[in-house]
Image (cartoon, rainbow, N blue to C red; front, side):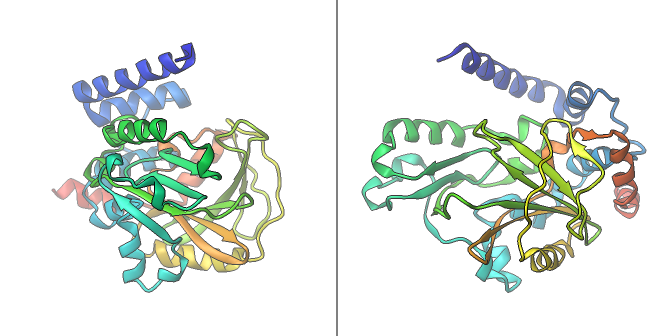
Length: 299
């Protein structure tokens, strides 16, 4: 293992230990200070990130629909129940443990995912190149991780863990991350090269497709040619957003067909480094959680 890998594993273990000792609220304040350089105000949240943090700690962990929809496997039954099953990718297999995988039955190309967190993905473009033993080891490691503890996102702890195998959608798929605040599309992002270190970029857009006045400090912004399906995507995103004060609806355009990637309730771990930082406050003004906060104080 490289020094980078060893340091990463040590950091992950320390995060788990700190979460067990101090809990989600304290650790959220620590991460907020480290990543954004600010003190987290949970009593009177004003910025977009602060309101996401409040929802993360106080609301999502008890919101059954959000927990189901954050689950990359259970979300399928939710999508079907609201009459949108046609946007689901084909699921080939689902297992409770990596030992159950029959590699001979898998197609030449596929995607393996764990359903209880983010980044638990293995894209296989050629099965003959796949190291089955290493893949099984990685999946088992992920299945034993409580993802909720890494960025203090308690709702992930309530997901029953599964390994799923989905149809591989191709190399040219672009993910549209559509942010809906109080049921309305407020902005969206398009990213490229994320996760592979090549030509990484992330650009925010206004609902009309114009480039937004703010960026993400972690990535350069590169304007892309947008999908002709954008109006349908935004309409679909708002359909999903009816039940939630905040949701990021992630959609693919696959050869002119809209496919659901996932629904996200704590985008960026509620630690999005906006540039300029004033954009965080301006977006926060557009997310009204006052009624939810009032209801929480009654409990």
